[in-house]
Image 1: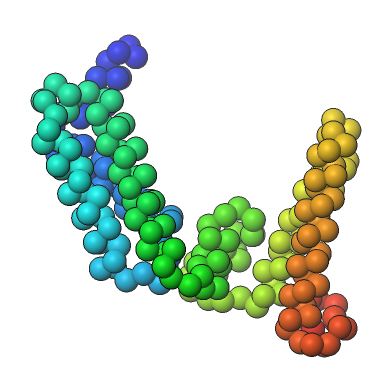
Image 2: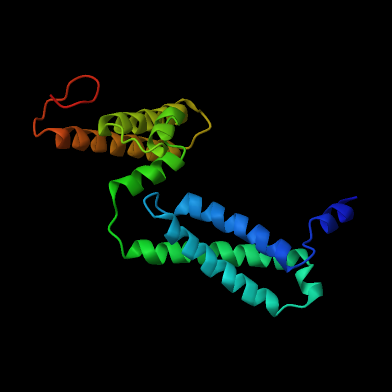
Length: 189
């Protein structure tokens, strides 16, 4: 039965591979390219990667194309090339707050509603983001400290993470206003 399943997943021709590679390239662009990039930029990267995939497929025999390994290889190469092209372009650009917020929103570090707000294009107050990160680090710290199976090293790491989170919160609060007095709720007075 598993042999039948394997053969149904094999591509029938080069176009099958191109379609699956294209889906993976689009997914990679969605998750790794900065939000501010125009569609033309994303389309150019996608077309570059797909053109290379077509070139490689032209050199393969029909038997090689129908193998599951050909599909896996092309997807792996296309995703790696897409990430390389994104990195090459972003290395030449300054890092913007919107890019950092985008990556943070796509992680699991923020509550879902805050992530959705950022991904919708809003820029929530820095205090709100910092507090969510501090609460997350405290949750991690509290969970580990209470776990009798946790090693001393794990507890030390959790404590260090919580400490860094609080230091960042203090710096963010101080940066919002030169005053050293913070009001309850995370904002500067």
